[in-house]
Length: 297
Image (cartoon, rainbow, N blue to C red):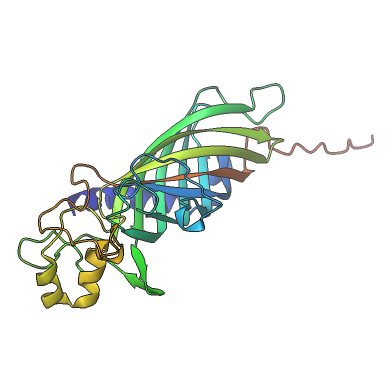
């Protein structure tokens, strides 16, 4: 909660700043535009695979559409402030991995607001005769919301309220929030087109402050206690190994209480990679100099 409080103290003035498109500030060197690309996730159900795409089996595909809007204020030819609003989706499954016997899967919508500082490798201008492209790196703060879900027998269920790791029960994992913060960082390249347009491409990873983007982060809770306290559905979703069969055709055994369900030492992350297109307002040399006709003598 302290992290959220400090973040909001920084976020509020930045949101006010980005909401002033027609102010004197925006009349100096501002850009408004959109971005479109793809999102993927790294966590307990996908620890190493980047940009995992499987066209043969869509259930194994971990790339999803993402898009949003952005505002950039060019502080100088080397530095820029950027605020963006993104939405998309992440998902993963144990199917086809070394952890397939765990048999867990999830998907989650993502909505984020980020405030970032960009550092251009080269000085960037939008005037003829000066450099008009540059690679850049960025970092900042992200506030985002998520909602892990899974499917069982054709039905979709929200996992947060179920307490699959014993949240709300004695000795269970601590309840987690569906809104938290992340540290974004990444790199990209951008170029100006004429005086009023810019295009770019970037990739950024968000290291989150939660281990439950996938609803997996702690240890298995006693399944019998879960069944007694929360019902059959929660118990079945908490440990889905018995849905699979062993070599003899028998259901796999449930995990022992206290056995690791996820990696407790690391937090989850998600990524956005995409292209950007912005329109510039009030850049240098934009003043209109009108010459009045000379008076006849």
